[in-house]
Image (cartoon, rainbow, N blue to C red; front, side, top):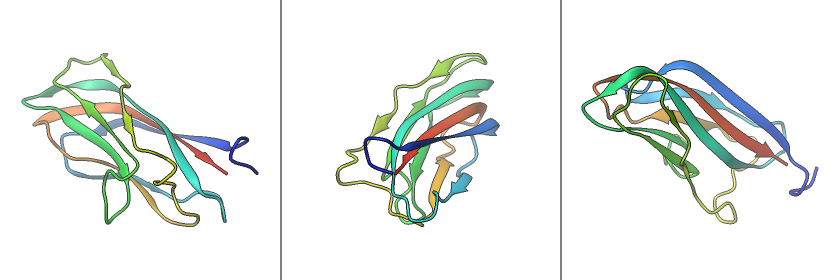
Length: 121
């Protein structure tokens, strides 16, 4: 499978706490395939309070090496999809390596339906 014809995989994390720092999901792509982050989005399901939270896509060693989405103080039902996705030419996801989807726990309360799409090729 070539770079121009990837297999897209969308990871959906319903009602995930973004007010607690830590991993929401750890994934490994198909055997032998490298990846690139395509998108991160969130729809708030429980109001976020006090501060913004970040949804980060990275590794255990570098939590946001691939991308980051800021989820501001918001009410339930608000959607956020303006993620910063870092240059895939230098930040490809290595084959057979764990990718961590995590929250920084910035808000004092809040949850969201988080969706992350990764292209594997």
